[in-house]
Image (tube, rainbow, N blue to C red; front, side):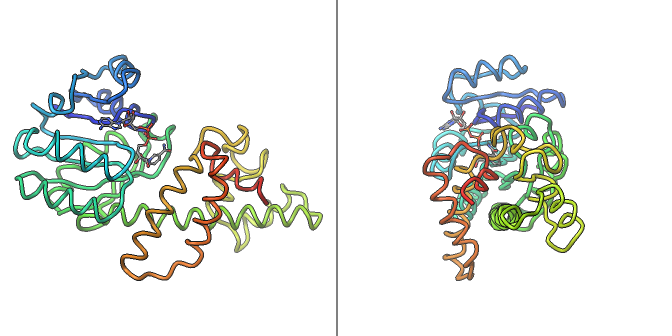
Length: 288
Ligand code: NAD
């Protein structure tokens, strides 16, 4: 299938390469020359503009920094430029309202579209093991699913337009809260004279167990290998966690959801990211 791919950064670069590996003809575009060169090396055909990349596409995938850029790219270069009937998939993490607006406008122009944000970082994007949370109609999901499956280990239909983004921000709000809680518990256990490995051995089989502890332990040398073992580099940057928490707080305000811990987690990551935006989000343990 001819697939246009717009946004070949840390995530999009690996994802586009996996579409090539799955046998697709990938028509790629990014504003950065280095990203285009890497995409060519991975077997993509690169174009001078997003419009050109979309011109013959049967499907369009985008992986862009934020909602304002997603809107601009869809308004100026995808809608009315990709062939009518193409299936459109935005995998960026953006606000729910913008995701719904872009899908509505795309559908009004005869396209089917899903929001399909991902869980999993740069390594999962490269390995093709992302989880996609997909919002859109049953028909749009059925068309998007096999394409997304070439880039991930799980593709889950969350519901109507925007529910992929809703799932993503609720999941990441919960992740931020249990990471901070895990860090607090390990730091306090140590101050109370407990060896971190011993505390892990106990808590990981007790009721405090959670993903932040058993899959992504913030203490170096404890649990499976994680960014803590690599100086808190190479995982999910605190700046990106803060971005997701801000989106979550916006969405909570829009629907009147009470999220006191989510809001506190946002404030804690806001402080931390001021000087540590590129540090893995588990590095918050250093502040405790
Ligand atoms: P990135 O900054 O590495 O990549 C974004 C790319 O988009 C860049 O290469 C940039 O040149 C390109 N771009 C910007 N404006 C453009 C335009 N108008 N036209 C074409 N290309 C344009 O970011 P990333 O880490 O790849 O993240 C992409 C998205 O994935 C974000 O929404 C992010 O929140 C989400 N995400 C990231 C991670 C992660 O661990 N990095 C994990 C899950 C989700």
